[in-house]
Image (cartoon, rainbow, N blue to C red):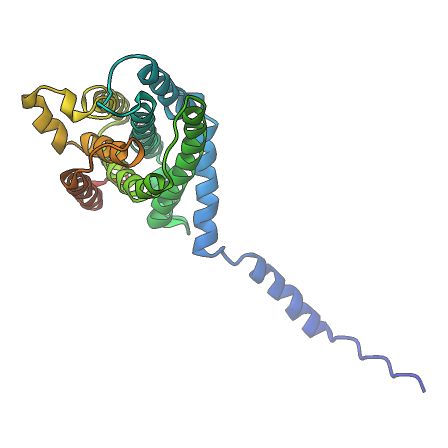
Length: 273
């Protein structure tokens, strides 16, 4: 006995099915997917731009080689390559979290991207979340490449020191990232470009990154100890170069991170007007 054929779907049911398909296709992506898509876009923008690559990779690599070869920025009893790697990674963090983000966000603001983002499903929170995640991904690339160069030059870190550097790195990213966004959200784009680059050079050269605070004259040392760059440099030297740990530096970096985040929440402007 053969089975009876199934009845064909009615035209109204078929029409209902066809009507449902476009509605399902038009449903917006989940917040997490939107943020991840924006993260990929921001990461490509940071890693495919020649100027960004020079600031993120080439310049820190030159700092590493220079501090390794020249008798500067060293601590007594510590291998020169150790202090050089710590200073280099601090330079890389500031270059991406502060300088690159300030410049890129400043241009996005001038070109109306920030105003447009506020009207999309991504929203302002998703835009900022994507930027933070993209910055962290670029940091992973920086640490991998610069760490490999350091290993080739003789750097031999301890596992405990590397693990201790992770929260320091996260706190430094928050502190300098908030400062970069604050610049981008308050100044005109041309001023952001000039101020962020000049401040980056000052942070590295005389702000406690390339040279430990102990090597500065007493009157300047007190100021450097209060800068986020000085605190970051001291903490990374403690983690990666077996330098002395300073609880005060941790407090200073945490304070800059908290105050910077609050300042961005209060004063960041999404448009030029």
